[in-house]
Length: 253
Ligand code: ADP
Ligand code: MG
Image (cartoon, rainbow, N blue to C red; front, side, top):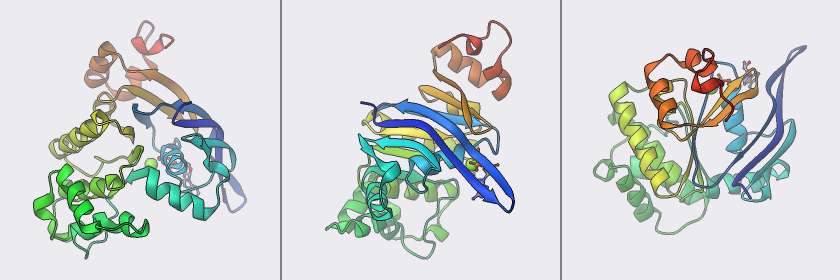
């Protein structure tokens, strides 16, 4: 059974008299150990989908199984537990507590989980992102790239099965972004399932499977071949995906 099984997932928002269909019925399976990118125009539902996968929100309809468990019908309390133990979430804007040291930021999920030796475990997670020497510094004393590394350390401190990252390099320059992607590569190599949202095709090209969303639906879902990878890096995003006749993207997967 796939690690993530999503069937006809929907999320609607009510805005006054209007109903916004942010997610219009998404079905997808993602296996343990995959490395997937999710792309799509702004407003296509990427963040809505990630928040559902991360148990930060509930679907309006449809089902979501994580590790065989039907999380779409869990209580808030159960969801909080799943979020804390099985999922690491990385945000574009880092979402760290600014006046708290890096090591204490990383320890937050451990404290929620009532773990012991929180300091040592948090330091080990900082070590994994190459920031052990900055443990006593606060985010306000750090660069954007360092802050995102702290946020990744916090996301992985409980050794989650899946790490979800929503535009993790969106606030970083290209070089710093590349260092962050390198960390995701290493996590993937060590067996963690990675799902990352990006609107940069050069970033998506570094994953092994591309999911593209339009208007709250998945309209492309395919493995990234070496040829496709080259095309993604060279050409412009949407043109490459929609592609002219004969483009690798217009072939069935
Ligand atoms: P993306 O991350 O691809 O830019 P989002 O998932 O953030 O897209 O948004 C999808 C659609 O849902 C957009 O039309 C957006 O305006 C709408 N939306 C997202 N969050 C909310 C919300 N909390 N309330 C109302 N509408 C929302
Ligand atoms: Mg978004």
